[in-house]
Length: 162
Image (cartoon, rainbow, N blue to C red; front, top):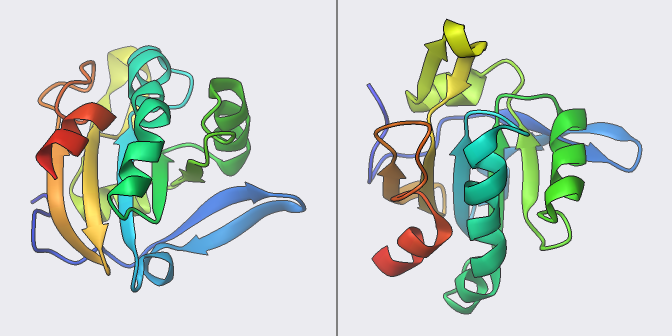
């Protein structure tokens, strides 16, 4: 069962590409006392993720900051090397978006947001969603009905809802 508004983030250690290689990121520690936007995508370098979802948060990053958001985080079931390269390629890193890998889909499964689509080569991937997390608690969650769409989980839609 997917987590929803009012639930606490599941305990998770994700990874990011640091200057010396992969670095663990304790998501709960990162969320403590802070307001985060977290959005998740089915895969780095995939169509809608690259052409619509990430760009929507690049466009809205300053507006989220003006509303008190401390950090915008993108999560995908990919390794930190892929996430680092994708962040550079899309301009997300330059825009200040934190790119985190959930290589084993541990966080994604704990969120109840995993799906598998073998014909597309997507195994244990994340559904497309975006949420506001305030001090570790989910205060707003928008999930797409179809992972190939980016409507309710886009940066603009999340902004309109807060």
